[in-house]
Each structure stands twice: as C-alpha cells, then as structure tokens.
Image (tube, rainbow, N blue to C red):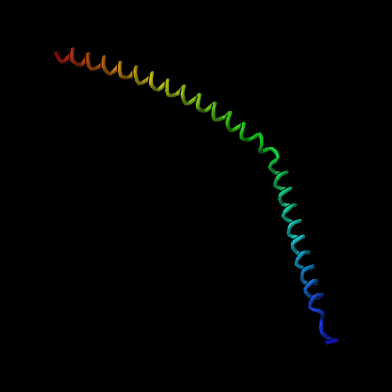
Length: 91
C-alpha cells in the first residue's frame, strides 16, 4: 500500500482540475457577455427610434388611405357622369 495513491488526494486533485476548468469556462462566458453588452450599448435607443418610425409610417398610411378614398369618390363621380352622358347620347 506504500506505492498506492491516497484516494482522498486523488479525488482532491481531480476536483481541483474540474474546478479550474469550470472557472476558466465561467471567465470565458463572462468575457463574451461583457463584449455582447458593449456591442449592444446603442441598442437601448433603437426601440424608441423604431417606435417613432412606426408612428410616422402609421400617420403616412392614414394620409394615403384618405387620399385613396378621396380619389375613389372622384372616380366614382366621374363614372356616374360618364354613364349619364352615355345614356343621354343613347336616347
């Protein structure tokens, strides 16, 4: 038994290796998270810009719908007049 390795020491050595690997992995994830946060530092402004753009587009869409509705009314009026004149000519 003098040549055998103490099982407790072997287990402690293995635990130290595992904990070292876990520590390195955590440090790697932390660096990645910090890098991602730095890359996205301007992202907080983006949602407000998107909301502002959306409001502008909704306003433009409403204006265009009103213009299309007005153009449709004018076209319907012109079609009615055209039908009236066609009837007059036909009589």
